[in-house]
Image (cartoon, rainbow, N blue to C red; front, side):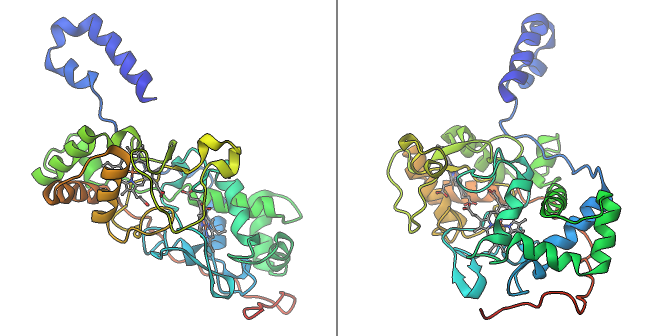
Length: 336
Ligand code: HEC
Ligand code: HEC
């Protein structure tokens, strides 16, 4: 997309270059990062249902874990833990990425094994290490609650409730979890006072050092799989092999989906194994392992300052009130 728009601009420059002066110079080198657009809500009733399901702990065996347990929307859509805690206090294998702006990802999960948000949403419910439920039981729980039955019927216009409807609604809610109007977006749109001189210097370092080769586009990432440890190897504390688990190709070993850097100030700790506790550490490791560059403390601080300008407006909504269980609702089993 970036390529094609700059080609269009380049063509325009050839035609109009003589008369347009500096304006064409600016247009011919568009920024590698674009502003996030606000979410468009196509079907408010579907989104509203998805919001309830996102906060619904009765989709877990324990009746205690919801999507929001690990992707806490009060904390940047993450749990701020190295790796997540699942059913029965199980230690998860990998860091939970943010759900904020996840609709912009080329695929879901660190290795991209789910093609989109709907394909992703069924996973955790039935994952024994996460919500430890089954799709059948999830549907049984929801069907036993008349208020849910009525709401599903209103939204999907079908007599029976199924897991496809559940995942579709959750995905529709997640699509609204975008974070526009960060200070950096305001700067991109022309408000040159929106970021400080140090933050701008950090952006120049981010661009000129080559971070933008992998972290670009509106999400500042999320649009490619790349090797972790290009110049020097990364010693991960997690056994995850990355994209190879999906493609089976040795060339994809240790390739991970490049994480979005939107709201990265909120989504600590960093990397798929959660081993970088701070942004300072993450930037230092990225510089050395991806680019063979050792940043000075001052350069690192400037890049970190720039990264913090990527924090956007967090989703705002009233906490959904969930309809009560009935006598027929299967009971939670938290300690099994
Ligand atoms: C027990 C913690 C836990 C729960 C509960 C949980 N998740 Fe996750 N989620 C994770 C972890 C860990 C990953 C990363 C897994 C991987 O990449 O292999 C993840 C990945 C994701 C991703 C992919 C994001 C990306 O950038 O690739 C999305 C979207 C997501 N979860 C949404 C949900 C939804 C929706 C629910 C509820 C149905 C949910 N999660 C429940 C821990 C959890
Ligand atoms: C060759 C591609 C590539 C380049 C260049 C690159 N990154 Fe990354 N970046 C990645 C990948 C892949 C990950 C995820 C690695 C992992 O978790 O194992 C990542 C992760 C990160 C994270 C952690 C995000 C999170 O949520 O866990 C930060 C911060 C980051 N990069 C910043 C930078 C900075 C700053 C630069 C430039 C100094 C840079 N990156 C250069 C590919 C790249």
